Image 1 (cartoon, rainbow, N blue to C red):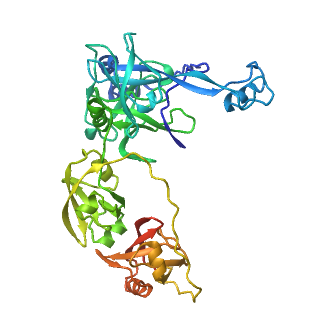
Image 2: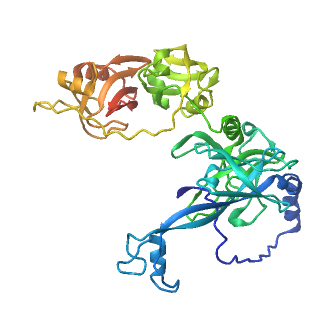
Image 3: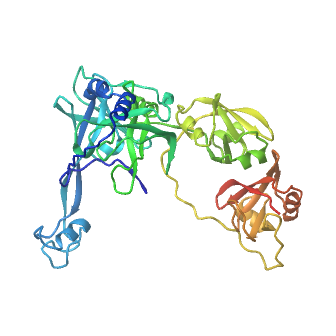
Length: 489
């Protein structure tokens, strides 16, 4: 199963086959169901006029194809792969490119009566022309005010007045199981309404931890991109953005960007044409029940700090690796992904108070939020220490880890003052540890002890009770993180 953005629908291909099915049911059952189901007609009549269709023209350049008929068996091969046969009419691989126009469609909704329209960023990406069509058949050429790829939100402006507009709702009040509806342009079919329920809230999707997606089973298909998700009060609670699908069509898993997240981006796009986000310069990981036990926390909550950026905002405020961030200005960090969502919504330059758990007790630290740069960092190849001269191999400890001391040269190479090297792993060890990882510290019962020698670490582990949890602070390549293991027999 793959995650797909609701890529704008191309022209509706093929023929739609309509099958009429007659279902027989007892009269009493039919009446009972009719009384229980909601009526969407009033919502459609009132909110439908504020939903728009969006037609996008994109100019793309492709190699010029050879002058052959579309009936030729090789035509599809040349069209798909852009290959020009040597000596053919196209002139080979070096033949000039040709500019083509590509048409796609999406959905959107009117935010204000003076012509501001919201849609998905991927709908208007690389567009050369954007046309907005209203339900009364009027068409307007739209200007793209700005877009934000991280939240998949784009803001458009059309030259019109006194337009119908949507009412913005509160997605925090949505409940799982609540009815919701979508209106959009699936497969180019304008003003199509589909209904379903909220399947889950706060969904994390691959490679995106800033948006707590609303999951629904509303029938969403290509062309619904950018369209509104309404609650039963007729308020917009989300923007339909992605689907899980094996075929590219609806399979019961649809995802919408919560409207409060989207409106934060829209406000910034209106004010300055771009979106800025906050950062505090920490790498974090989830706090499991075992990690909480090791750090002396009663509940598994917060974000565990793996590492702190040198000279970054958190480092200047005194945040340390091994701290667990529990709150930001009083807002609970229930799970690790809550932290980046809270921090990125803070305006850079703002001072916030972090409540952190350190050495078995909470403390407060004031951090000045910096601006998040969207530039991606190249993946670094893990650095492994040079192997010292052969020596007798040590025996595995209670966790199945074969440990050795670092030489002075290894410490210099790894840029650490102390640490213990995991030479090998014997047997089955359940946890995120690998050979050549470096143990920096051992955390147990809320206390962190720096790892200085293999004998010291093995002694600490030998004193643990069977079934106890122990957390190791590890360094792997350029990254530091925490791994929790459970002591077995």
